[in-house]
Image (cartoon, rainbow, N blue to C red; front, side, top):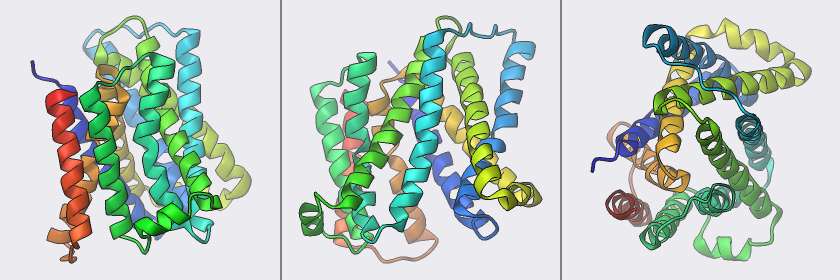
Length: 302
């Protein structure tokens, strides 16, 4: 039986890759927090338009909100915003590259938290694939920085390592919470539940990030709207990517979704080789191969 969540996840990963590239470009005009904010505020109108089309054009009924949905949605929105700020803090640390590598453990944390909160079980093949894929990500990360595998072993008790693990925990938590939110909606098919959850999450996140910018970087609020053309591109890519993720989370175990979503790193690798003519190392190729093995295993056996 064909699994629709697989192409949807690949599409989401591709759009996330594009959004990240666009955010790097817009950082010429905005601060890091301002560049992060555009992914929420410019995606929100698109999510609301999609929700309106589904309701008024295709006759879908809005899902009934319940307390479980609100809690999961609020927690997912909060942890995703906190992840953004912890990541910014991680970049300020001396040994941030090590911490960034340890943040890649998010998928393993998703599998554990998903089992505890949602009862999402992972098969033996799935566990093996997740570990192989995570190993590939770590190898790829170390190959692209000054970090070595021995550095990782000797840095287990450093501050950057702890912050990196916390960073991965918040990102992983947001994924599980958003899946929990979509599953908590008792009526409606996949599309309306995903669109509704995304809309509510974006409203919460836009308010959270907006308050932060007004209090700490008020000049960025006007800059976000002044540079509306590149910001709109970020919003469109972010909306399409998020809609893909939320739809996939509604259909499948979040750990499997994020594991297949690691194909984003392969997109980045291909772009660096084809468009930027960057040289590749044996370690990078080894990391890519392990990620591919993990994705193929999950697709076939997960």
